[in-house]
Length: 542
Ligand SMILES: Cc1cc2nc3c(=O)[nH]c(=O)nc-3n(C[C@H](O)[C@H](O)[C@H](O)COP(=O)(O)OP(=O)(O)OC[C@H]3O[C@@H](n4cnc5c(N)ncnc54)[C@H](O)[C@@H]3O)c2cc1C
Ligand SMILES: *[C@@H]1O[C@H](CO)[C@@H](O)[C@H](O)[C@H]1NC(C)=O
Ligand SMILES: *[C@@H]1O[C@H](CO)[C@@H](O)[C@H](O)[C@H]1NC(C)=O
Ligand SMILES: *[C@@H]1O[C@H](CO)[C@@H](O)[C@H](O)[C@H]1NC(C)=O
Ligand SMILES: *[C@@H]1O[C@H](CO)[C@@H](O)[C@H](O)[C@H]1NC(C)=O
Image 1 (cartoon, rainbow, N blue to C red):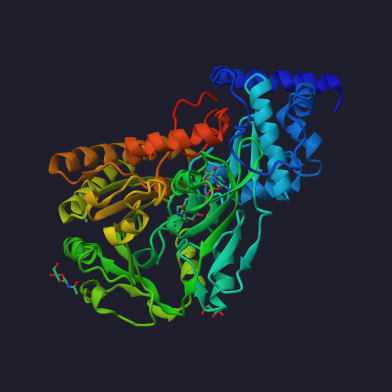
Image 2 (image 1 turned 45 degrees about the vertical axis):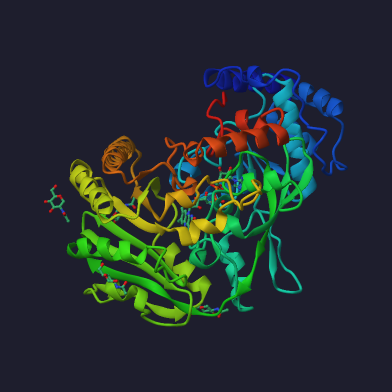
């Protein structure tokens, strides 16, 4: 590219950046360094900061600076790799974000170098280089894991799947999706607590918590991580586990993309054969009974740890409201007693069978295909039938004006979030760096998670759908507060762009996460220059 075009482009890019932001460089703490010298880690593959700084200053367009150092791994919109990467996001909104370039690193050293470069850029050039980190690309909202006009780092080449000799551990590359993991594990009669839909990324799901069919037996997905391999903002390669960097280990279990780029997840394995699962359809008129049965089912006192349930009420214009619940029982036993109340109600369809984990997650993918416009919003309340009823009744009452939106699907999913699950992530007394960072403890009791999912096709309907969702959650939150059933926890992986799940972890957890962020990212690059996803500090200026 000629120097003239480079400078025109550069001026254009800076113009765009300025329009959409305050000067982000002003957010960098005075005297801050890219690195914290007290953190031990490998930097042997990295050039010196002064060398990189001089190069970055000469080639101040972020993508060109990256291309200079990572030749053949940075793709612009004309490249087929760019198009393929965008097409592999789940929602239409994320597919339509246009980064200036997509970086597809091949090795851990590539990630170290690129994160280091982007941190040096943050320090030395105006507005830095805003970037995004993506795993499976399943967060629905635009910009969660894709950076308009910036750099998107696509980790899809991190495809390791190594099982330890004793079959107790699997090391999973950050580009893997759950289907890849389960195909390998099913063949060996093994499993790990992981996602329930084949195409979802291991990375994002695990860093946000992770609800699994196995959670009542083994806890949330993040509670099954043995070790994270992480690249810090400094480019340092570190491990985070119960012995090494235990504070970072805890922070990553729920802290999403606020601390570093995880390149490998080492997870616990257990023996698992085929089991019973599938979907049962029922009429919406049974809903009052369903709430009562759910509350009994989801009580930790009597919870059967082999059982997992997603109770969904779905609406389309053609069908009206109907119930389609996912039942999984992780033993090869059909119609277990714990589901009897539900399964005895009249059924409209039924796919229940004994099969393998991969097969069930492919079935769930069939009900959640990619490519639509998508909205997720979530809330948490105490395990309570009246709160469940209220959520449906308000949704139904307020949906009326939007019912004719073309190709609309609305789904309300209720999932148990009982102490039998959450207790597996509690910190142990005397060891504050144990457990996860979700901020839930025994005082919270058995909780219920609700997820609103809306699918549609036409961007012209975006505003109406957002308005519907906003008023539904505002109204139900106020009513739950009044009834004493409100809980501030928000499941990060189901949150909308407008929600702030990390604040919902509570002040103690936020304080802990802030101290870990300052220790491992002294320049605060992940707060200020990685604007997508759910941030610890919502003061990000880019
Ligand atoms: C169809 C569907 C089914 C789902 N099923 C489940 C389920 O069964 N259980 C459940 O708990 N959740 C489920 N979810 C929610 C899911 O956990 C989130 O959407 C999650 O963010 C997906 O992870 P991802 O890697 O695919 O997404 P991405 O959008 O790629 O990433 C999510 C966030 O994590 C960050 N991130 C990604 N990779 C890294 C990395 N290597 N290092 C640092 N940060 C990173 C990104 O920056 C982004 O902010 C489902 C979602 C969908 C759309
Ligand atoms: C899992 O089930 C599917 C569907 O029945 C089948 O095609 C596949 O071979 C099974 N895989 C294993 C490893 O049993
Ligand atoms: C069925 O539901 C009733 C009423 O909610 C409850 O008392 C009973 O314990 C439930 N049975 C099972 C097996 O959960
Ligand atoms: C939904 O609301 C409409 C009124 O807007 C009402 O006629 C209908 O009965 C409600 N549906 C259910 C299943 O409650
Ligand atoms: C909307 O649904 C109709 C039929 O219900 C279908 O023919 C059409 O292709 C759908 N439109 C889109 C954009 O998916």
